[in-house]
Image (cartoon, rainbow, N blue to C red; front, top):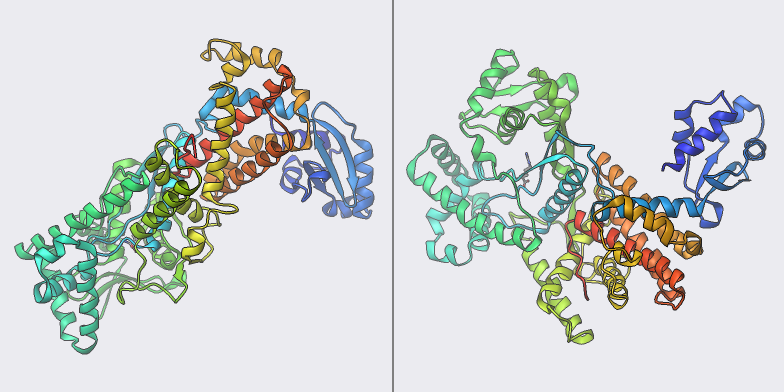
Amino acid sequence: MDFREKLADLIIEKYDQFQREEILEIIEIPPQEDMGDLALPCFKFARTFRKAPNLIAEEISNNLAANDYFQEIKNMGPYVNFFINKELIARTVFTNLLKQGERYGSSTLGKDKNVIVEFSSPNIAKPFSIAHIRTTVIGHALRNIYKFLGFNTIAINHLGDYGTQFGKLIVAFKSWGDKETVEKDPIPELLKLYVKFHDLAEENPELEDEAREWFKKLEEGHQEAVELWQWFRDVSLQEFNRIYEMMGIDFDSYAGESFYSDKMDAVIDRLEEKGLLQDSEGAKIVDLEEYKMPPALIKKSDGSTLYITRDLAAAIYRKETYNFYKNIYVVGSQQNLHFQQMFQVLELMGFDWAKDCIHIPFGMVSLEDGTMSTRRGRVVFLEDVLNKAIEKTQEIIAEKNPSLPDKEKVAREVGIGAILFQELSHSRIKDYLFSWDTALSFEGETGPYVQYTHARANSVLDRANVRSFADILAINNEEDPVDLNQALEKGIDFSLLLEDEAYQVIKQIYSFPETILKAMERNEPFLVTRNIIELAQAFNKFYHEYPILVDDPELRKARLLLVLSTRTVIKIGLNLLGIEAPEKM
Ligand code: ARG
């Protein structure tokens, strides 16, 4: 049931001078609860009506009568405000929840469509820092959201396992490295070598030449170079996989940059064929001046290829392999230009699917004492952050709830959940400052707060011995939705859920499916985070105001329905964000 549509119907019926679309576009949600559920601002109509907006609002509301969908319609200043029929919205919400259960909000919208979500893509031999947490967490959530909406998702980790930096690392390792030391603690040791290389290269530029040469050797398949590179890659991946496992993340493909090392000639040939390549001081470029961008450097004068060359090869390979409907890159906004250039080149190459390649940027993470820099060795390791969060959770459990079953598991789910949730609680494009204090605070609008609300709802249900909707409705088969629906209609008195506090909960649940859709359309998982925070807050208000396990069986049933629904939706939401919802906390 879409009340915006109903609102538009109502207006169009009375005023045929309006277009449905234009009404739908301007409908707002009033800022305060006592102002109703939807509002129609009348500023835009002043010209048509030749009247002041508040007079128009008055006229329109006088012309519209309350009906099945809206129990009250009244004007407030220049707005017509609509109060949705509360019983109807409750009935709609619960019917859908009953039908879909833990699939509430899912759809078949994406049926037979392949969506690639490329995310995480860390660089081999470098730390998996909190800068990578953003792409990892946002990308993972997006993948879940697309999947939930019926798309066929392909999660790709475009590992940074190729490029001139491996020349540097080879030089550094050969000069100062030691196999055993690296094997004991691979990434920090490799990082040390990398940092040392940069420190020394400032004074000795010939080191850079040596590094270039070693990268060249790597591209040409020189045995020692390839073996060292393979080893760097293996030990790095082991580390990364440990972190992915902690976060419950997996990928369908780890085809990173090196995967395309033998697929770039074809790209260069095609660029050549299309007459797109130009010589520039011995290098090959695609001129993009017409598009107000610097040229795309495709091949250096020494013959080595670049990041963008590999990305072009990757995009073409993905189209051929997956025939994608969308090819999404979750990568920081520092790379905006790179993606604009690359998509432009694809278009110039004549690929009409270039428009289906989408860069989803996000803001930068900085540290309180300045920016992070791998070269300077100033990084915060993601694994440390996760471990600290887990430790802190363990301390809290030991203090507040030492007899909690499965303590270790819960501590992991809550600790890691806190970090992931924080990542997803701002619009992705915002830059943000990493602070240990905020990351480890469990107060206010945090993951643990939402998880706790879920556990609280759960414990009420436990006390009532309720596990499913069928339990509340006291019927045996949960399988047959028709039966369940009838039981719902017969068994629940929706007029018992009309308190403001209950209604706010219902409204949040009502908007959940629409939120998921919007999150997909805007590639913005944070909308889901907002929805479940607001749901948790609304539920807690209700919970503090009204006892649930009351004697009156009708009231008890109705309230339990609200509790079970809240629990279900919070769990779905957390899971979409890649966060666990522990039963007990
Ligand atoms: N490895 C890169 C980095 O850590 C990100 C790769 C982004 N993906 C791509 N297809 N270019 O900065």
